[in-house]
Length: 267
DNA sequence: TTCCAGGCGTATC
DNA sequence: GATACGCATGGA
Image (cartoon, rainbow, N blue to C red; front, side, top):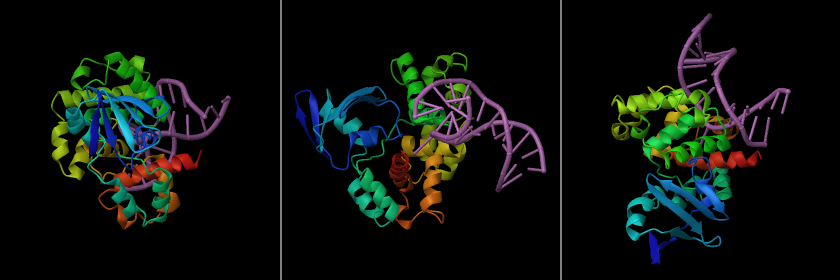
């Protein structure tokens, strides 16, 4: 990791990183593009404005300390993973090679467990602009993304302002099971992947797809492979006989390049 | 207007 | 285990 202090900001030198491709590729829903190459968002209670210096590999993390860079953002932006090396691995496969070439600046964000789980509960049978709308109303209501504990007194009715439809009752079930201790997200983080999947899916509204997304984006289980309608098209088009060996162990990362690629291919 | 969206619960076989 | 259908809402 290569960064310097510049006044109140941190200047980060980072390859394989593009703000649009990472912050607006459907893995996280509350980064707001405030203008060209400038995004505003947060991890837990750490707000951040991040900008890219005219399309270069230099990023400005506004009003950030070296301490926060080391302890929060290095992890969140997954800076210890060599995405250049991953893309080299993926380039063995023709389709993945194209996907990586199309958007080589994708990184997987290591998000908060609860935020990822609740966000992807909201995401089901929904489109990305509307998911952002619902989460935006939640964040505005709470003045930041609410913790599970913050939501213990909510009911499906009290969440009506979200206009999240049938998903509100699923959020309530997740809050209930987690706040009662029936489900412990920290314990899930320690489980083998199949037990983690099974445990998450005891929450109403959490099926195979939402569980995979929570595990990939909230627990950084890179072997998790979410199959939404877009990735199902990817599989039908290019991988009817299964995924190539070069993605083994990092299926989820490959999936994100493919997801972004096919969505933009069909526009 | 109709179709669809980072799916899942439920009923039925 | 597989398949069919309803579900809230609003973007395109």
